[in-house]
Length: 411
Image (spheres, one colour):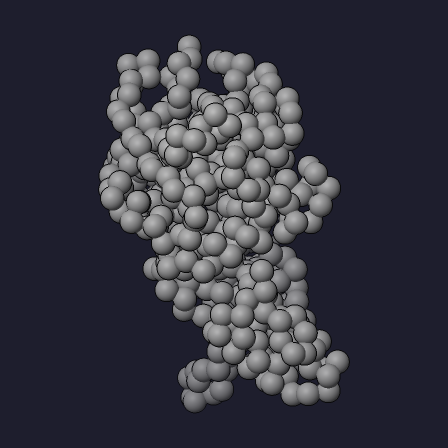
């Protein structure tokens, strides 16, 4: 699978990401063409130039707004700090509507929304309000929308399936934002980077912005150094605006990732023809509680045309032995086949809500290569409403699907 490793020795921001992606080979024309699918009323231009940071050639990207807005606007993206934008503040609901109503691929929509939702959760926690009611200031401005949706477009163009990140240099000091003078890292940035190793070095500046931190929180897995399972094919640099003692760049490694350790998966299989079928339910519960990802049985015929069941257990490496012991202890099996799963294809998933005449239903939406491949109303929602209204379960499910495909999504 294609993967990238984000080396954040000078922090991370939206425009640094885009600059590195363009140097990596994403055509600027493709990025601009895809961004035009967003219904953003404010006019803007994307300007790029090659710069040298401590001798390292990097691409600097900036989103330019009309001259009349410049007095109040300072780009949220890297190393420009925060300042009030002249544009109306947007809520998460508004941003979701902009993205979902666009002609962007489902893959790009899902990635962009997952990043924005991380920011909404963090801002909501900091300011004490529900995520959908958060009023974005800097992150709701056109330049940051371009940064986030642009990142999703670039990831899709490069067919990235896995994102890794180093420890993040957040910078230190104070930055001016819409709420006044704020410590670095800003509260939302600190919230987003919880669980990721961070440090402060090289400059009393804001090196990690909320936009960059949200990309990390939504998509990345921390690795202390370049993953040994990754075969690097390209390296690119995105530049920040300030001149620092350290190279003010985000370095991105791009290549093929072959998973050989960590969350490696295995399929445990065994054929059983002499066990009380009552045991299977208890066995399933034990295996799932022990960490099995999935458990299923398949009817088969064995020697002498004897009916039997093939038991299959999908596990990650860390619980393989535990699940194997459970199978051998609880069943009549005396041996297991262990099949390594070398690769897997996974559709991107997101949740949407629809309002049926019976009540609200969540729908799981799966997309692959930019196309919606499956929409599934959540069973528990449909069951609750069916019991409440005393109607067939399938009636609720069909109503939810109809609402979704008619575009009646509750934002």
